[in-house]
Length: 326
Image (cartoon, rainbow, N blue to C red; front, side, top):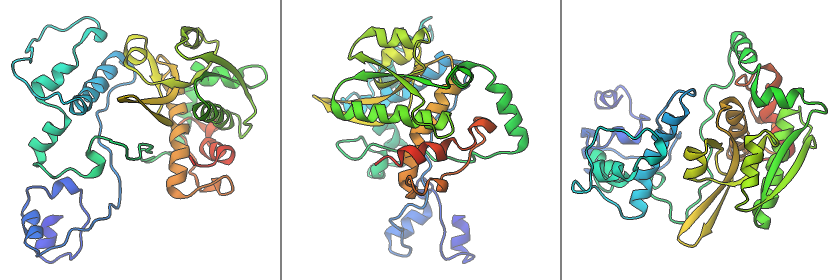
């Protein structure tokens, strides 16, 4: 692509920002021969992908990456003296020392600067210090072929999705951790959003159970199937890795002393399909705001075959009740 700029095939190109770093084009931009725009045309978050059936390995990958970011936040840096270069693995992922990722390789900033050079990080790739944090990952291709519908119908034949849809009275059992007003109201709203997505727009098809903060009964109820999902859960390492729960994309952030608490849905880690469905509905409300979709214009949201024919309108139904994130 860059070569086409040099041979005059194109006079404007769109490329990934990192592909310009340390290139001949970057030198020419600095010399004033070319101009780099300041508007991003797309967003492409990069991440690691793991298999759904290996939950423990997925957790290790996730928390190793988070350790790099947490390391930069807390001033931890690459330190060969603290790097325990050992190939003997712990049998339990909760006993792994994730700080070793930082001591042996470096924190997120060190890794980025080694690859791309200093002063090359855009605001999206810097540690958050009070800037907006609500973010929707791109939806991608979410409407497939007729064969995709058939495959998903077979996959859905089990788990919480089938249980909720087949339960007498068609109702979602949503637990809510009671903390403070803003989170409580938002959590209740998201339970209604989830019900609307599950039951063709019927946002009232939900039963609520409330739990106190730091009350272990909430997670026991989730584990034993008394509730289908737990809203207002604080994302943490213990719940994710040690106890095997899954967390959705956070829908509320709260400053707490020197840290930030992330509030999200918690689901059982052994049901990846329902966890994915719930996470998709949280992302749906954020994506709706990005494209300007509201309750009245919910049909601007795409149809999706990701969860089978029964949930074709799930994203539209979610926005039809809840509107966008705001």
